[in-house]
Length: 455
Image 1 (tube, one colour):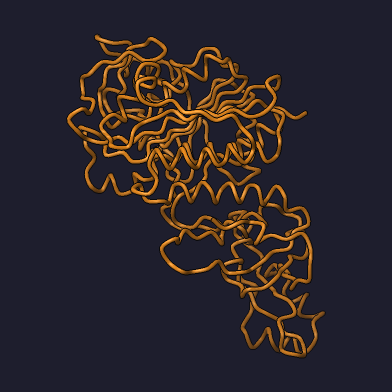
Image 2: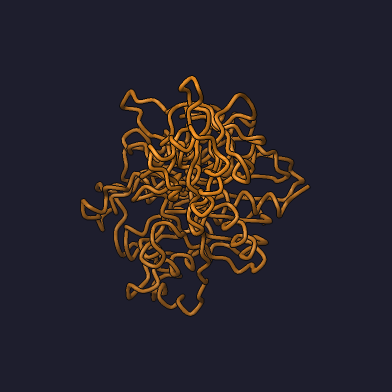
């Protein structure tokens, strides 16, 4: 994995980048030398948004860069995306962009590549930014999330997910444990049942960090390392991206890394049910009924709605500890993508202050989110005459909401609870977001937790 500290530096000799609005180009040319005017004319530079040109000194070396200002409604990462277009070198922005952390973060995120099978290298376009620590932490967490999601499922099953979680916990001296085998089957029956058909055994990953007296923040991430759909098997086209079905786990590990590196005053707990939903003679079946850790019974309406089955067990455990803030993240439903598309994950919470804080920080961090409701009348869609709940909503409507309502039944004691239904993937590259695995909601959540539990 690349390290953002290689991309972002606090000081040093640099080539300045001047951001010029198209309307101001004439003013800049009026003050320029004849040689610069000739260069601008020769290169046809008109300060169109994000167009750029190099201005050479008397030795023919690049002395400065002029770039057209982004459009007023441009992605905040747009200016930072120059990092993939400029030659290798050391740069610094002039003016307001020099102090904008979103420009610096976009610069870093643009340079990410997942290419362990090829000998390509990251372009050394280094940006000099005065206070890089938080930006580097956010970029490195995003790189880790992307790497985890992008790694093919044959190389990243429950064992490898556990190993990566253990590394992150170990770096920060967190207390780490896993529950597997007969104990898992007894204490967390649905995690066991979902993963039982795989040759790669299921487990619950659990680690804690921070002072025991600090506010309790618990993160739960869906760790389905590959999802065939089970006996309700997906079509082949539906399986192509299922290596990303552990995107919730990847995101909570990235968020945990940020929290621990910043040494926030919280008692952090991370819970990840790590499984593979496969097909074999011992696979769970549609119509089966199981009793959960919480005591609620669940009828299986669809084996491809397995994420909520493993999450509900981890949420039940988390809730027993009465955390101040309980967060779960999961690549849970296609319905969320139909409703809001790939770039805008929905979140669910009954805490109005938490919702307002998330909306504020999502915008400030360029980490878009949108609140959807725990619409209680839709509980009727997951009712069944033979159990407390059905894991698949009837009728095909409001799939993201019914999944959220299912999970909410397992949370009673937490002082605040929020559920995220993320996609974890960029289908079409955007500034700072190459095609592939992606962190969603992570930076906004970090900002909320930092603000909410400031010392």
